[in-house]
Image (cartoon, rainbow, N blue to C red; front, side, top):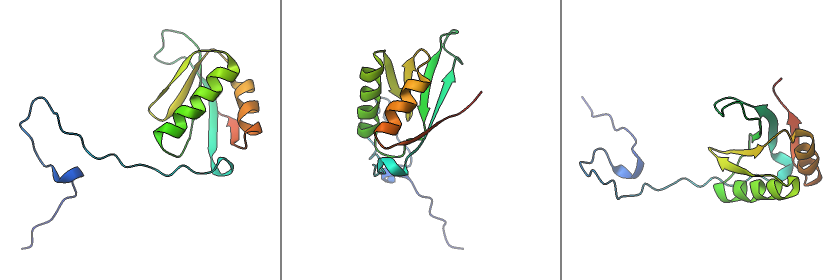
Length: 114
């Protein structure tokens, strides 16, 4: 019987190194042009102690381009926020302003959720 090979990241199967000082190679996604991005802008309170945040999801591309877009939205809306797990979070309800900014920059953005 032939052995089945299982794909691993960086050919690391098991490590006893408790410090985990090795870095696995990250897969860089190519960023789609703004006309091909389908962004969803929604409002969320979940897991934030009742605080309202505007959330942009659906971005396809690398992390640096997502952070640039997040910085642009934060500066134009005049609020704080962050970029986590492939999503842009802005403090407060700024959905309408965010959709306006994104459509002016050529992105396809629409409201999602309730």
